[in-house]
Length: 503
Length: 99
Image (cartoon, rainbow over all chains, first blue to last red; front, side):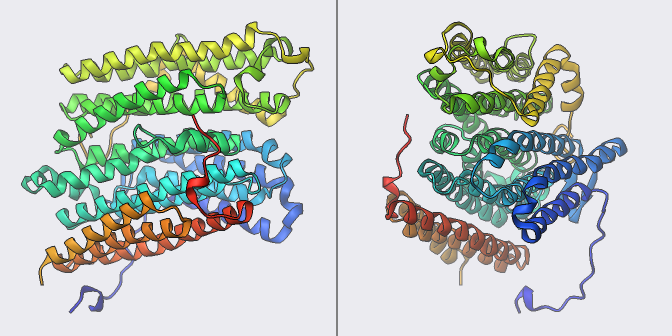
């Protein structure tokens, strides 16, 4: 008799409502946004953006109370876990989602396209991300991945009569669907080996004698390749520049920061909880992906003339930096601890500086109507504030102290050299060379903005809407604060996973 | 019955699907190829579940089916949008952005 046919009296598993409160809050606000759209139609336009913003901040409240409580919680037999890693990532997703709402407010409001659904999509995508931060089970990881991706495909296609936006969405969709199908194939093999979908149980099997099999190796490769698409690591990066360029700019900011971070969250959980024992497979894989992403991303970024495309390649390079610590994570428990902290630190700081850059691009594009770097010439003459903000963010990305980026790079280097292996040293050297290459293209944008003359001598000032200004002020403050007082991030990134090494 | 019969079938379907995604130009056929990969996954999951007498595989397969339906819904909408805007669903023509 099949297992499905057996009649078993159903008993609801105990649910810790406090642990799932952030998800429930966001779900409620998502439903509210959809309802508001259905009831008020066009009249709802005025308050959808504030409602989405309030929803994201409201979901922060239970995250904070859970953090104050401090206890690790495990639900559904270990499938859903709230530990401090999950909480830090949830806070990151919610706050960067809030900044994306601020960035979107005027951009979407002034376009010809329906707004209400946009925020509904944004909120459901962020819901997927905060679920991902807690998911320690193949099924929940898969559902979270799709919940965060499907709305993102639609958001990338938001300008539906614009061929570029269509192309952006289509490429993102095709690559995303293909990658998640390949990843699922890997997951089905993992389930086959372990007989369970819970990551910690898979971890036990993969670390044991059964983990030595070729099937296990194949499963690890397939799953990591699937997530490498999500984080746009070379050679799975081809969608990123086109999608970033064609998608509406606030959506690009969202994809570049939150969506990428969600991919890394899943990778970290899989590597540290599930694949820990197969460092012979994932370490070389991560090493190659990291080295290729850094080098190719930075080299192609050098010859971009469109700033959004340049940021796409710089994002690919950053994916390399974030991935690098995972290439040495399997050496020892200390190395694992260090690399987990490096990944979290980099993600937090990267979110602040990257969202800031996109904020400035959005503000500049209100006047220039273009994302060509040459059209930003002479910005200092008519928008000194924006030029200074851009300087802060790009210098931070280049890793120049005392702005946030240097600390992010520093912890990555530290994680790479701590285990003292040759491969770690080589990767650190590759990363160092790449950091120098990156300075060149960040500075050349700044040179255009500070030193060149405005095209056609047009120096009418830019009127920056309040929400956009608030987004830039928030991110600029975070970028500077993280750089001047790295201890803030250090406190935040001192995380451990409930089950797994270093935990 | 042996487990490896199912696994071989799934592997064959997986390869067909990957081949289809990489070579087909027609949008709808690409989506169908993705479905082939997902069905390979489902066969794997159900076969493993049956042989281990464990319900997780079946549950996972149901989730894959449900989510794949949502995903293909979005995909078909995009193909339709593409057809409206350019009267063609040849994916190789989508190459406005390069570099």
